[in-house]
Image 1: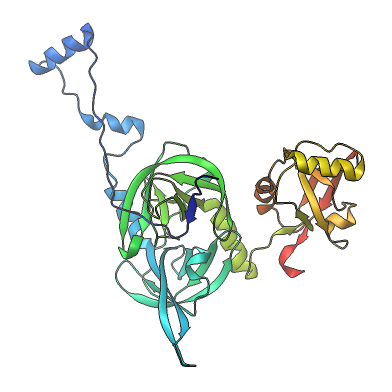
Image 2: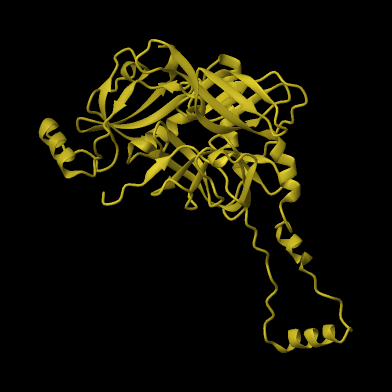
Length: 376
């Protein structure tokens, strides 16, 4: 690739800029007459309050006042060995953001904000500071749950992120580059973005042009009424700063992760038991030619090549073999390993998946009951 976009984790929010709407008058006879009448004092004044009919607020002050007290700063410290000594010292190595999700002290943030931490401190909107316990982390979703013991906490109100629409106003809140309690405003630029980051893959994420910068991972993405719709997690940038391509984890997805962590201490993912070829796809002629020479049959042009199967896994017990090709999963065609990852992200132990499989020239349909990934 000529240009490699570096996905940076460490999100945030810059200064908010709001551009108001204006009323454009068309030069037709009816509007001209109305304008003349209004200037003469014979017509009711036309007010910009017509914005209310479009659902756009006049400003975001009420929404910011609602969500800002629920957004915190999260400081990570690690034990660093001193030069020429066996002694270690605790040193702050990173700062991110978090969102208070319950009045009894649970806080949602990104996994990469607290990963490797020996000490986590949380600073509240009112300047109070508390040591935080890491209740659970999930690198796969890049989410983590913290707990503090503090009175008078204000929990954020959550929205239903499945109802979001492209073009909807959103507010990003957090601590970019150490500037605490920062707010920026934008719109939802796109939905259902799936993209790899340095440590995970964001699935069905929210794309926004609200300014998000390093240091605000785990901060809130809220709607125009101050309800949290997402957790800011990544930016796409060539420079390391915001260029209007920010990505947030939908709050509905985050709720599932939190529920599992609080109930089981971890997130329970469904396990199929196969390894997928990631160095290319079946669109690559060299891959298809190698399979044709091996089995004497031309493989499908789309699908995912299975490179390894554990015999005791759900897939192995269902007859899936090495070099089989999974062409679809639960009725969805597979063309890239990310397609497989996206579908499997929401699968839980006990769920069943239906796969169409090409196996050495024969096509078949296999139904597999998933097992628990993390207990094996």
